[in-house]
Amino acid sequence: MDREPEELQFLGLFGIYKESLKIIFSWPKIFTKITLSLILPLTFILLAHIQLCDLLFSKIIKNQLLLDPISSEWISLLLFEASYLVFLIIFSLLCTSTVVYSIASIYTTKEVTFKKAITVFPKVRKSLMATFLWGLSFIVLHNFKGTQAMNKSKALIEGKERVAYAISLKLIVADILIQYGFDMMVVYGEKLGLGSRIVRFLLLMLLILFGLVVQSVFYFVCKSYHNERIDKSLLADHF
Image 1 (cartoon, one colour):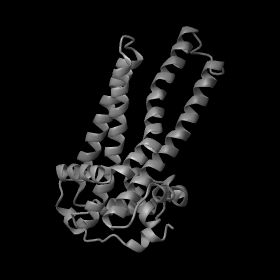
Image 2 (cartoon, rainbow, N blue to C red; image 1 turned 30 degrees about the vertical axis):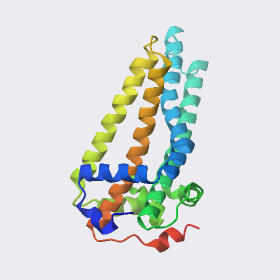
Image 3 (cartoon, one colour; image 1 turned 30 degrees about the horizontal axis):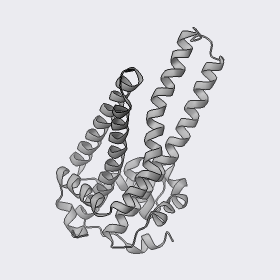
């Protein structure tokens, strides 16, 4: 990296966005593999869920089975939702742990490959299941678990709360706009061509990648703000 980790503390919202884009374009090979192997399936799952749910609900309403909780249509919907949730969790955690580890390796000038990054997930999957996104960096890099990771992440963002809220809000709004647009224009807009569907698919896929990188960079900005260095030995302990 051409930027020392200690300099990250001075980055604001747009500085974090710029740093995130610089990382993505500076290491295209690793992030292309992450995108095609993990984020692409996650994007497909998210958008397919919208369309399939609409089809199932339409069938239920059409057959006037809303008051029958044990109908085959309701059972199919429940099974579909359960399967969707499982795949969503798995790919979300895979994407997050891989991106966090990759960026940590970049900032510590440690060699990073897709194979190395993806092998982090099996070693931290139990802890990941018990923690929200803002605590994931602590799990991947420190092996903290559950409440401990959340408490550490809460303490780390002190002094950077406004940036954290701004990042979260902007990503949520962008996600809603893209998915709502897909819902309105693809599910209900029969006249749309394949090109429009592909554009919306690509937009969501790129947003997911950018969002993961932004949140990972923000973690290191917070560490730098509190004068905490990245311990290279923690990365080495994963292998």
